[in-house]
Length: 188
Image (cartoon, rainbow, N blue to C red; front, side):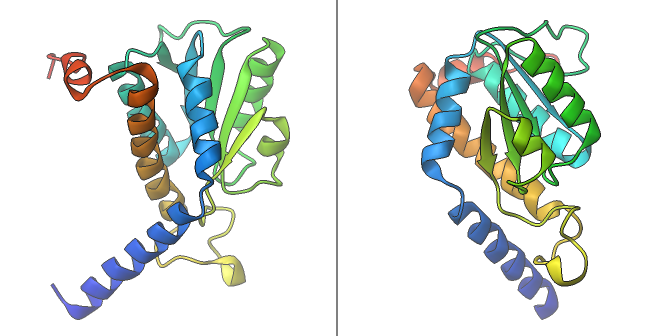
């Protein structure tokens, strides 16, 4: 590996660590408690954020939580006692805003992951979990803060945040690595 490559890795990892270090652990615990106590959970994200959210949904399923992804044919309707978890790093994603309104109209609690606490999505959410990372809303000019392109830092932070949330949810739900593994698909 070239020196430039190793420096890029070090820089990117440093940026990621700094973002994760600024996430409020108490809010993470509160979000986990909301998920653990939900009647149903439906999740949504756009673009590369959607990939992270879908990976989290898979782990929630492994934890035996009642989870679905918006757009899947088996996604149930939401109502009182349910949670809609959405990711909108830039805080202005039109699809997320529309789905948040639908969820709220049904009486569902809306949990938002975003980098923009003053964005439209944060104003619509019942609970916001701030992930203070560069997104597509802040990747140009003086606002740019990461060596990584566009929203990659936010997306990488989501991946690790979700994995830590899974560990916290294991404790809340009484799941074990063995019970989670038993729920992994055999259709691969």
